[in-house]
Image (tube, rainbow, N blue to C red):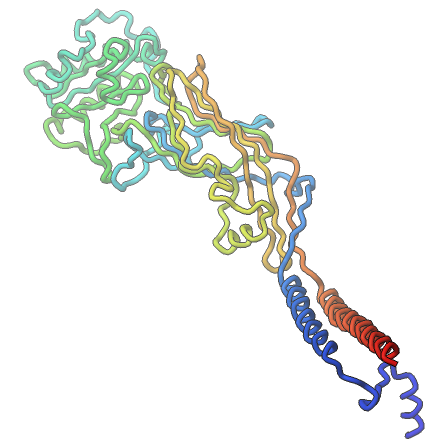
Length: 476
């Protein structure tokens, strides 16, 4: 065994020098202190670098699954667009058209100051009611003309409402196709109701207002679509449904039989408060509407369209005001607080307050009549993949640029959000140094500093020694 150990000593890389043969110097001591400090500093810097993470950014073709849908979220207030007619439509470059989306959209009436009504249910949407029925055209051509068809004016409107317990008023426009279809039916219904309940009875009356002649009167009652049939009780049409202040409006069929039957059903309640009726509906008292919700769209160029629409109604383009406030408009799902912190930490450009919602709290005013607003959005997908993405998953962040403008159009004014998705996806990968790289660098720091310090110490020692010899030679 001793022989084996003696042979192993022959391959020792670190042969020792007896302490009697070494010499300690003051210069060596200072170099040792500096070398120790330098090694600690470099090792600490390397440790921080090892513990920190870095990111690499790549541009790749969008890797989203085929036929994946995109979620567009919005919260927009239109102070001059009634919830009675406000609709959300979606169309895209592949020919998809979805009109008047309601399942994921909530409408809440607001006033001109963008303030919501008291808490209550959202406005009932009339888009999916059965198609309104009309009498056949020409059915009442043989009926004699009657003077009760003379429209009310602002001079006698209030007096007429105050005179009768119930007044059913048809707000119409002569140019409106639906008003023209309703006109003979309305006259015939008016005659029959007034014959059945004559002046001495005085419980109910039919009347109508020409909104092209009485513009201010119609706007005072927030009439935006024609024809609009309102029920006035004791001089006003205000009702409270679910804690919300509304107008009492008729939404049933527009046939003589339906209108007369509706009048008959109201007569027993003449002089009494409002009672719910199958043909009655709540028409928003406030002129504006807040629309909030989301739509699912295909990842192709498309448009989210906010416009006034209703089957059986016409609209005066000059009356439509599409001024709006965008409270929020963002794409994709809002990240959780944890994911947001990850995005903020790893996003190559950092996250600003409006990083995903460039249109946040922006107000767009219709300065001219018949103004249509267009917002063009270019959407880019950024995917963050953390180091441990197998456990936590990757994070998708949709960002967009927005360009907005308005113009006067002959078509019905609206607000359009046209979007286009970039085919390029930004991929951000979180990377870190492997442990073996840290170990190698640490050894290099310790060995390198020690070696360089030893070389400097040897040079200084030999230099001082040579200087001393020269001095001794001169003295000799």
